[in-house]
Length: 194
Length: 226
Image (tube, rainbow over all chains, first blue to last red):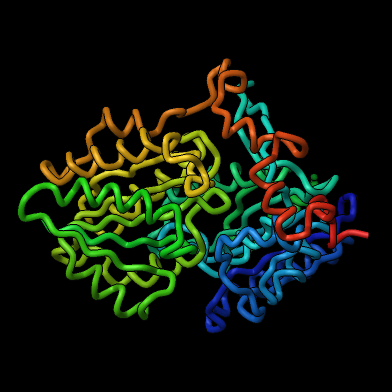
C-alpha cells in the first residue's frame, strides 16, 4: 500500500432512498478502503439527520452568528465539515443534479462563511465578489456521483462546474468529480495522492 | 397567453423574488387577454398539487434566488417531483428567473446551463433564463436605487406578454454587471460599497442588523472550532 498523508474525511451522503443498496454498499466499500489507507472517515447519512431547509432568514449571519437559527442537526453537519481535511459530497444524480437532500444540507453550510463581501481574483485574474471567510481553514471538496439512467457527460460537467464555484465561495479547492462505482480503488488512489 | 409563475424563493411572500415578479407580471398583463397565476413553494401546497399546476400550465416561469451556487434545496425537491413528466406530451413552455445577492450575473451562468438542460430533459420548450445579481437588500434600498431594475423587469414582462419570448437586449441590460469591470470596485454603487467590508461604514447593511439583534460583538463567532 502506497504511503499517504492521513486525512480527516467527511462524506456527506445525499442518498435519500434506503432501498438503493448498490449505492450504499459502494460507499461503504469506499469508506473501508479509505480507513485501511489510514484516513479517518465520518459518513453523515443525511436521510437519517433532521435538517430543515434553509429559509433565507440570515439568522446564521445576523442573529446567532456562525450557527443556524433553526434548531436542527445542521450544527453537527457544520462541526464535522469545518473540522475536516476533505469533504466528499456524495449523491445519486437525479434530474441532472445531486439530490435535494444533499442540496438542502449544503446550503446550511452558509453559516461557515461571513456575510461580508470581498474581492477574489479568479483563474483569469479578474476580480469577482464573494463572501469572506469566517474560519482560518476550510476542507478540500470533491464530488462522488452515482449516475442515473439519463445522466450523461454533459450533466457531469455542469455539476462539476457548479461545485467548482462552490469551492471558491467556501474558500477551498475542488479536487475531483468521481463516479461512485466499483472498483473503488481508483477513488482511493486519487485521495491518497492528495 | 396564460402564464403560471412559481415563486420558489425560500422566503415566499416576503421575498425579493416576489418584488421582481410583481413588476414582471404587471408588465405581462398589460397585453389584453394575458393572465398570470402565481404559486408559492414556501409555504406550499403539496408536491402533487404543485405538479398538477405545472401540468396544466401553458407557460411556466420558475423564479428563485441562487443558494450556494445552485437552486435552493426545496426547488431541487420540486424539480425531482417533476421527473415522471419527462418527455410527456403537452408540457408547458419553461422559463426561469434566477436572482442573486452577489452583484455579478456571472455567478448565475453555471446554474443557467443546468436549467436549460432541465427544460430539454422535461421535453419543455425553453424560453430562457432571466439573470439578475445584486438583489439582496432590494427591499431596504431607497426606491430610487431600485427604479431602473424594476422598470427593466416590467419592460421584460411587457415584451414577453406580446411575443412569448425574452428580449435579448433587455436581458443583457438587466444582467449588467455581467462581471466586474476593472473600474467596478472603484465606481461601484454606494450600496455595494456599504456591504463589502467588515466594519465601520462598510458592511453597514449587515452591521445594522447585527446591532439590532444584539449580536454585533459576536459577528465573527466560530462556534465549531476550538
